[in-house]
Length: 214
Length: 214
Image (cartoon, each protein chain N blue to C red):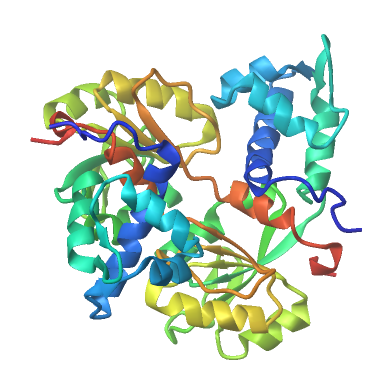
């Protein structure tokens, strides 16, 4: 069934993965109970905000006794649909794509890169981290054949929109875009962006000239 | 002088780099004028929101004639302090660190990685992309000597807090954290996080079981 939680604001949805990650850290440290105060300290979010966010899903916390770590992990894993394995296609097998393939954090948290594409003839047919690089010719058919609906885009900004259009033709429903650009996508297609320079600029806004290297 | 714009909410500051990136794309395409409608279409943000965000800095747009692209780029570059070059230290020379060093998008947008550290004896002394990997022993002194106040953290989650503490001892004022964890940092230290799995989970929340690979 579809997530029957229509009233959750997207900004709250965006924080749920942080709660899940922090709860998994607590479980690894042997904690079985936690509180909005503890989560707040670990995440730099106010306890009131955390209680409000978690209340969207009903009945997670108990006044006075706090949150059951394992139960909350189960509930959040289910909501975020990470209680199953997702297969992901990666487009772009350059330095960034190679680093993405070698990053173990995806597979251990439920996202298995299963198909890799590039349009560079010198890369097609090569094997990276056990995955063969396929030509982007025929990408749509291969995505449909393998029933893959999630993709990561690690191509130059100029190529990103064209590749994204073809990913959607191939049935992709969600794209993690590493290209430093904004994509125009049909309604209902999920997209998230990773552009580290955006974060660097966000920080340097707050720095002072004395923080510059002389 | 310090940024004399005390009233800009942080959420607005976070969108300014997106405006800058989009304006640079428009300039590269030969456009000299733009509008909140055009920026809105390109970014998926409402024109009203864009006008409101840009109004925080006063006098950028003119009713009817729109925004001067070059002028707005200058103003935003100045506000975000990217009208100068920032030197950055990178800690962690594994697969991710190596990809960060090879990523050309940092230097071309004002962030020059100038120092690289790792604690792995097999990496120390090696050269990656023209940069020698230094031991994390003596990191604080080297940061102070080179007057570097910005850092990127590409170490495992378990090591991140300890390294961050030492970066701050070395005078760092801002940290881009690629480790999948939350850091506890003193007030006044800027931090931004890049954890791609958080974005994947945000998207799979909205997917349906039929989107899974069968």
